[in-house]
Image 1 (tube, rainbow, N blue to C red):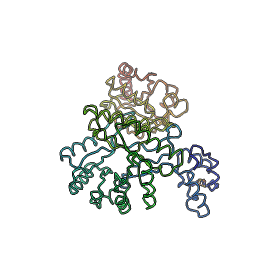
Image 2: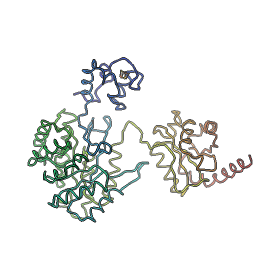
Image 3: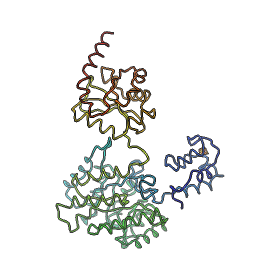
Image 4: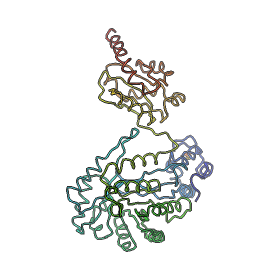
Length: 479
Ligand code: SF4
């Protein structure tokens, strides 16, 4: 199998119908081939290729060429599924990484009702705003420790109802898993784990309920490979691999994760081509002082995020364990080929009213973050109108013609600002001064050219805004 990064558009083009029919939304088959290699479209968008029998062989060949070396596995019902794995490359800089590491927070079924509810609340409420995005924890992993199958089922259903997310079910006791019955069929949880002892029964549960499961190798990659072979032989392909997390031997743990991903992506060893699961929660059972555990768990998790873990089972109840991890994950899984963007639209800083200033900026996440934090620091109540510049910063987007009157007009129309403010004044960045008159003409709004540096915005507003407002309202009342 040739790595996707080594394929050329012409190799793809040769296998496409070459009719340039445009049904895929592209002008030509070559344009479609280029987009396929950039992961900007999917093979299935070429309907003739998929539907016409005469292209069947080419379709199969293309599927093989574009196959991900790490299988994509999902758990949860189709409409709210969580996807893990599905990577083309080992390293982000080679192309991009696609599915960020999932955090599943551990809860024992033997915990008190109060502690279970508290942990669910913790997972639901954890949120950190970063570069215009909300970073959150993903789901929970429920561990069978009570020895009471009835209690386990009740806790699983309680967490399902309260959390509303696809779950990870942790037990090596197949009887406890099977007791969940319809829950397995309806909720498609990720089962953790099949081992050398219980694999036959877990395999049969996976086949019967069509649920994905984690194969556990405990530091033994040969055992893992043999479990994979067996599961594949019996038709269970939605599997993940846990080579073991050893908090006392972090170097060894990282080495095994790296070896598995290298085997999948570089050595074409298909038995290693599955999502990897790590369990930093094991820190809590290791020989580590209690007060250090939340920090050490974060260190183990961080090592595994950058070393290919697709899902991590965590235990800490401290927000400071997760804060650096969600930021690390966000940065690590950002597409290096594209600027980080935020969704264009109307944002607010403080509590703006109908006389508050409206600041226009681009949708490059870093720019928006700096502008909004400069306004917050200056205690300015304002509207921020974020226009779609495809993620480019102000100076670049002005030069590329993306920060223009049409983009401002579109954002204005969609924002409903006309009904929110009494004035018709926009403050644009100093770096966009050259498009000021074009924006005035097209939108009919008066444009004030703001400072070059957004740190000067609070001062600019303090000295210029009231006068601009007075002039505008005076003029508009007089007409
Ligand atoms: S739909 Fe297929 S055949 Fe038609 S232009 Fe696109 S790639 Fe070519």
